[in-house]
Image (cartoon, rainbow, N blue to C red; front, side, top):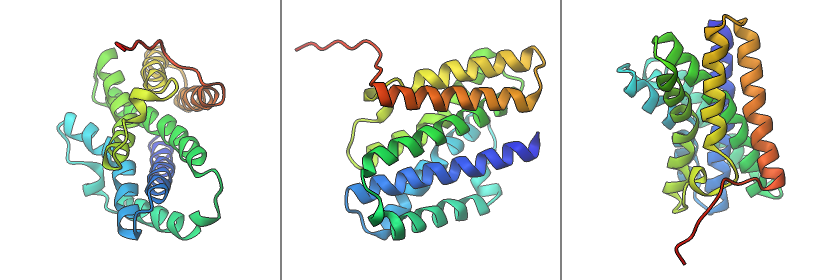
Length: 202
């Protein structure tokens, strides 16, 4: 279980770092700006989660995760010019990071013996905060507030994870099903432009 979570966390860091770096390149940031945006996207959610759990952030306890974020951002900067439709790729890498980090965050909440709402908060904050920081730093309204169904998948996915663990489902199956649910759901929302109801005062 511990090894699986470590792998999920690393893959999530890479995915979110790539999405952050690509967003920086979309706005023609220099290499430092691209790397900073990649790091914020990859590590922001986990750091907020750990602070809420009254823990020293994992990125400070295991500094190699910062190196993963830096390395992924630099590679994206070097290879990103070859990528077409960069905005679309940002969203797909973001969807992958969202699924992985939400599941990792939900498990952190379970390990801290939190209840259903606590697990949902840990999962959702881990999944969305990094992307929110990324968007705010480039002057955009965060994706969680404007794009196709986004945080809803984190909320529901975290709740499903809590239920699976409560019912003593095998851990690997619980993780795989929740990651799959969030990733596939988010990709379908992007593909078919699913949105929650909106209302304007204009």
